[in-house]
Length: 112
Image 1 (cartoon, rainbow, N blue to C red):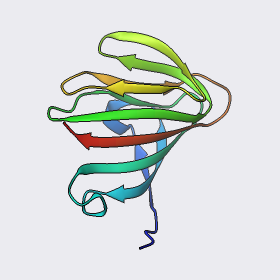
Image 2 (image 1 turned 180 degrees about the horizontal axis):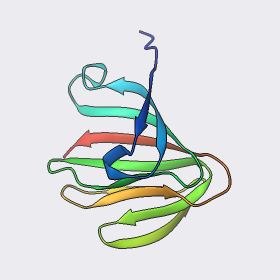
Image 3 (image 1 turned 180 degrees about the vertical axis):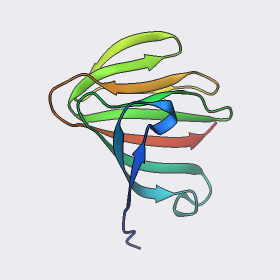
Image 4 (image 1 turned 90 degrees about the vertical axis):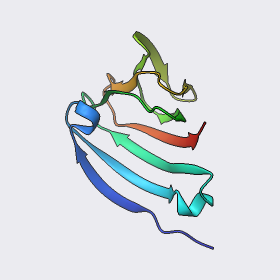
């Protein structure tokens, strides 16, 4: 099976700044109901995904390109290419591009 990505623009995603480009790579049905989705997110310089939480799922933000700040349950941590931010159920999280180039992130969102 080959799945074609779906691309959408998301303004102020989860209360964040600016507009991010979301590439939906896999959805719940594509994952045989074992996860919520896999997305590639392009975050322009100065933009962000706002701080939010998921009650019954885990998520990972893997940075493919760029650098920024990972908002990790009340603590801000620098994050860069090759690093992964891990989010457990009920943890508050977000990510902000503080670099000069687009930040590219793969988000894997799975059930607990």
